Image (cartoon, rainbow, N blue to C red; front, side):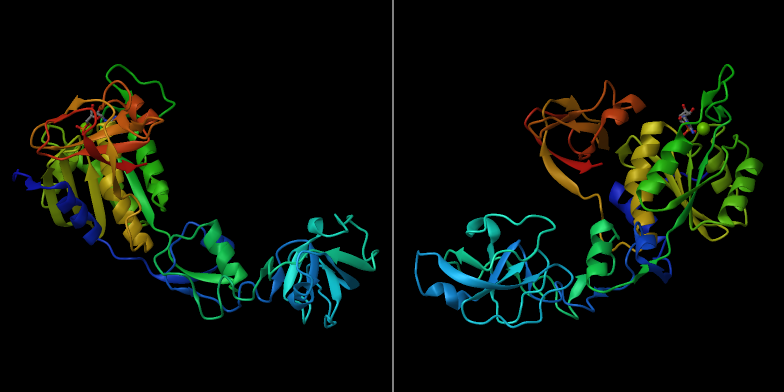
Length: 411
Ligand code: AMP
Ligand code: MG
C-alpha cells in the first residue's frame, strides 16, 4: 500500500474540482430551468418596463399645468381613465388629467402621476370608473412614473452565464421577453456508502450493526449542491461488492461520491480497491489532507467517471461533501463562482484546535453575530443538526480564544 500524499485542504479541493468540466447545455422552458445554471448570458428582448407606466393609482397630469400656482391646488378636467392593460389613446391637453391605475401606460402628453390620496378625490372605489369630472391636485414634480427601460433596455444583460437560476432569475428573464433559457444539464451524482456494519435505515440493526446515515447525508449534500442524487444501496467491505456497485452507478452518473473505507484499516475497502490496480481505475490519488476531521481522502476515476471518496465518520463525511464534493458538483453544473465563500466572524468562546491541522468545527451564530461551537462535541451528528456554519481554524492555531477572528463557511 503506497503512503497517501500529503495535501492541503485547498489543494485537495482544487484537484477534485479540476476532475470535471461543465456539462453540455440545452434550452429548457423557464420553469424547468430553476435549479440549473445559465450556460449563456440572458439579454433583454423587451424593455422593462416596456412603456412609461404609472407607479401609483392617481391622476396622470402634465407637470407644466402644476407649475403655475405654487402651493395652491390646481383644478384639472378629468378626461378619461387608464387601467392596467389598456391605457387611453387620447393625448392629454392643457388643464387635463386622466384617472390612472398602477401599471397603466401613461397617456401621451402626461409626464407625472399624482397619487389619488393627495387629490380632492381622496380614493377610488373598486369597480366604479370615471365619476368625477374635475380634480384638484397639489403642485408636484414628475413623480410616480416608471419610465420605459428603467430596469433594462433591449439588448441589456439580464443575467450572466454561470448564474444559478432562481425564481428572481426566471422572473427577470420572463419580464424581458424570454420563454426559455440555455442552461447546463443538471449533474447526476451517484451516492454510495460502504461498510459491513451498515443496515438500510428502517431495518433493525443486529448487534454490531448501525443504520446507514451517510447515504442520506451524501444525497442531501448532493441535492443541495444542485445535482440529482442517484442512491445505491450500501455495500459491505468487499472489493467485489464495491466494484460491482461502482460499475452500476457509473453507467448512469457524472460523478460518484462514496463514504467510508478510505483510511488504512484492515477492512478499508475503498483504499483496498484503489490500491488494487484494477483496470477500471484511473487517476488514482490517495491523500492525507491536513484537516480534522476528514484527513483520509481519495480521488480517482472509475471507468472514466470522477469519484470522490470521503471518510465514513458522519461529521467527516459532511465536511468533505461540503468542502470537496459540493464545489465539484457546482462546476459540473456550470457555476463559475464558489457559493460557499469563507467569511470573517468573531469567536464567542474559546476552544482548542489540533496543532498542524486545519480544524473544521460545526458552529452556530449567536444573536450578536459571534460564533460558538455547535452541540456538545464537534464529532457528533447532533452538533451538525444545530450548526449553521463550519468554523475553519488554520493549521498553525492550536487554541481559539473568545474574541479571536475566525473564518466560517455559512451553511
Ligand atoms: P470508515 O471511514 O469506514 O472507517 O468509518 C468510520 C466510522 O464511520 C465508523 O465508525 C463507521 O461505522 C462509521 N460509518 C461509516 N459509514 C457510515 C454510514 N454510512 N453511516 C453511518 N456511519 C458510518
Ligand atoms: Mg468502514
